[in-house]
Length: 475
Image 1 (cartoon, rainbow, N blue to C red):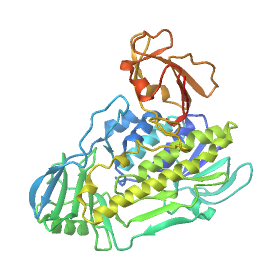
Image 2: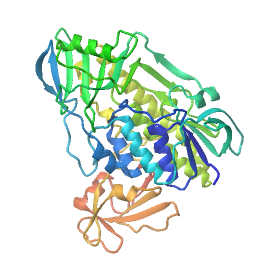
Image 3: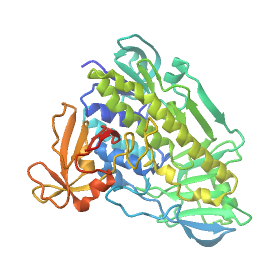
Image 4: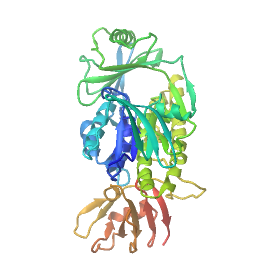
């Protein structure tokens, strides 16, 4: 089968896009210039909305099994333990929000889970294979690939650049990557062992006269590694440098760290591509926007780029190309907003604002909306579709997210017949809790679904394949 979508980059963005396309029967090919898969934590915070995406993609069980809640941090000032704190108190799941807390799992572990899911559709990432050039015409994109076997010319209907901040795809298109890089502020980040410390906790070591400047050691799930983050004054992120920094801020000599599994020197790089699309070529993830790590937004925003683009590319290949026009307008606006959130958190942290460590509701990305007009209301077209529990006629239960899962759109008819739908839509009739559901009907447990969707008898709502309302019509 000829390639319909060629994806450059096999990080979380490219893998999410690949899974979403493959499950829709799209012939997708994913290449990455790296010779080996990335090993390291890097973006280790998965936000609630991304967990919902992973639920839909069929990987939530593996992600939850491999990860854990963010741990309590044990605060030490001048070498003395002064207390514990959490960046956010854990919240209980609700009917509308089944995953209310950020989840900790290293990026390479996330990528491994996504690759395994992609493999279930018969798609494997091609390593050591780089996009070097491409041209496009009205029917497709011709791509030059440099791989293990030499130079190859590939043809695809669409090309997606998910190839990182130094994106070859973006540079070939000549799209400006507007923003700033702070050369004066540098951080050291890496994954190390520190066996003296209890791996059940995170640690913050700082001086009492500058409590917001110090070393953070956060436990990573799956082994004895901690993610190490600290200011970096020296040039190389070596074990020796990390040890000296830790000794200086902790005031202790009994904590010995091992050789880093992965380490990097980081500068705040805050950039947004001027465009996310040029004809049949698209940008997603870090190729389109790069974020400071504050708020844990980068990987999450990229995953949702891929999730937004996947169903739209599939629709275009099915003859509904007009939906592709919404990718840039929807996702670029979200990326700009998220960049503002993470930059503000970074500025507050640099200024010594302790509140910057607390949960910011905007980082959860549950409030992302694609509203297009001045319409107001509690839940309108463009908003995230909440979850809810429904009762089947046989007495069993089902979640709305279960109904949404898959490549289809979903029509919800409240106290109304579903009527006719197209081949891309599944429809369900939801009745109030006072009625026993009959046949294929579903009953709203405690009436929650009616309340969550602000629905009255006769209300009909179409939920897009990515879990946002396409339209609502009153009864």
